[in-house]
Amino acid sequence: MASTLPLSQRARLMPASPIRKLVPLGDAAKRRGIHVYHLNIGQPDIETPPEFMDAVRAYREKVIAYGHSQGLSVFIESLVRYYGGLGIPLAPKNVFVTTGGSEAITFAMMAVCEPGEEIIVFEPFYTNYNGFAIMGGIRLVPLETRAEDGYHLPSEETIEAAVTPRTRAILICNPNNPTGTVLRPDELAVIRRIALRHGLYVLSDEVYREFVYEGETRSVLSLEGLEQQAVVLDSLSKRYSLCGSRMGCIVSRNEELMGAFLRFGQARLCTATLEQIGSAALVDAGSKYFAPMIDEYRRRRDATYEELMKIPGVVCRKPSGAFYIMARLPVDDADAFAAWMLSDFHDGNETTMIAPGSGFYATPGRGKDEARLAYVLAAEECRRAIEILGRGIEAYPGRIGR
Ligand SMILES: Cc1ncc(COP(=O)(O)O)c(C=O)c1O
Image 1 (cartoon, rainbow, N blue to C red):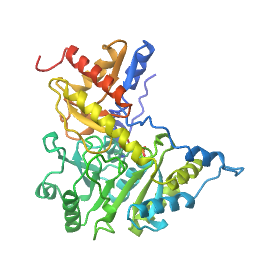
Image 2 (cartoon, helix red, strand yellow):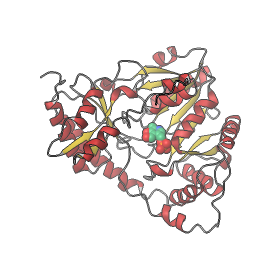
Image 3 (cartoon, rainbow, N blue to C red):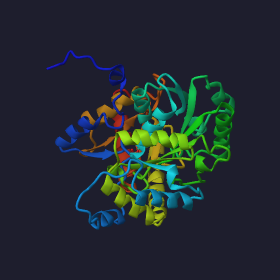
């Protein structure tokens, strides 16, 4: 029975995730015996390295107790060693363990903004930034990046013009989800200069740090003069194929800010104990898993991009990082098309699920003909999934340019 009790404004405004909202249609297709290629979600199929479960199995305590709110010291110390290996010297007090990168982003937004204050973001952006901002009553101020420019940042003047007395932070994602763009050193220098001139935090989502196929990334933690303003939002989900463990962290040298995270963290007591034990062992296993994994993703990216280029009317750039491609599709409405692919179309009893682009924008109307494709399947499966996508576009009644 429908309730007449009121919901809060934030509850009403909270959008459904474009990554997950088509899942019921996908499940229905599966019940009809159709195989669904999931290019909608960044769920890697790479095996979680065995160090994780080995450490969990070796756990001998009789009680799975609450841990410290900041995180277990064995895990924090492993993370300090990990960042040290990247040339970023830290102390344990600079690392705060969170329930995934998601909690890191939420805590950071909540700690730096009052309700009604602003964070500058670059569109398209990781869709859940929208939801986290709504929960905190925070206004995201989106600045456009364009496929034609490889989704690189707009000019220093454009970014600076978006700063208002209410701006508290610039949020970047590097390498980027959904565009795969890796920021160049000169772009990070622009962000640094603006942050210093206006006293802004730089919230840097670096969960794809290792996923770079050309060039290299630099963490904002290594930008000179930004020691009090740089805040890294990090996650083990992608790096170690560990999405279900919900392990992430916030890294900052700003002690006041770290104090705020601790108080936020005390309210939710702690994060999962066993997952931290397993994660510490993974982090200490070092970087041996990264190179083969990156080679594998490079093959997947190349296969996905090559197949996309065969579809008439598709526009996209070959991304150099993360594991996503943002593509413009020759369809009238990518939301309707993505749903149609699951409910009305199959090719040899197979179809492809994609994430429609509009949810990766805050500006109404943008991304309507775009989709994000996550190349998280083996290269041959990615090829087949894109081939099906091409056949779907061909058959779609709302196809443009027929
Ligand atoms: C850019 C980005 N940041 C943060 C997250 C959140 O990751 P998790 O909460 O699994 O650590 C994701 C997940 O897809 C992401 O793509």
